[in-house]
Image (cartoon, rainbow, N blue to C red; front, side, top):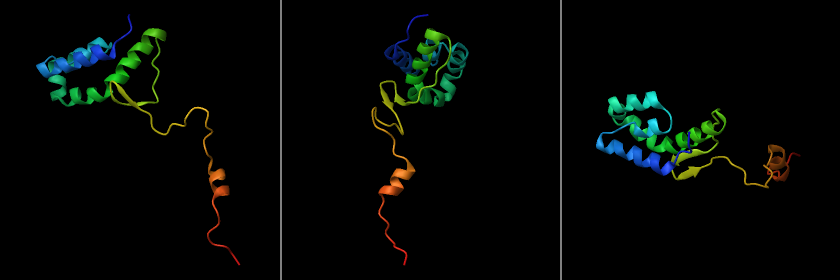
Length: 113
């Protein structure tokens, strides 16, 4: 099983505009749901539209399954096949700030007498 291309998967997703829904799912190894999409026109178009936003992750999972045979979940939230947005990430080399550090650096606004 070869490495899957995100560009080709997106082109196959676009075939759904010509009533050939589900080809992208068959390409990434989801044969049965690909057939379901084909016969229901992408679940009346709703599933086809949702897959536009999930296509990058589907290709990534298909490629990771081919390498080790185990599904690995990605920490990135995919917006489109070419754009990945990671939420709540700490840049490499930066230590995350703890709540104790925040409390220690915050000046006391009200002093007690």
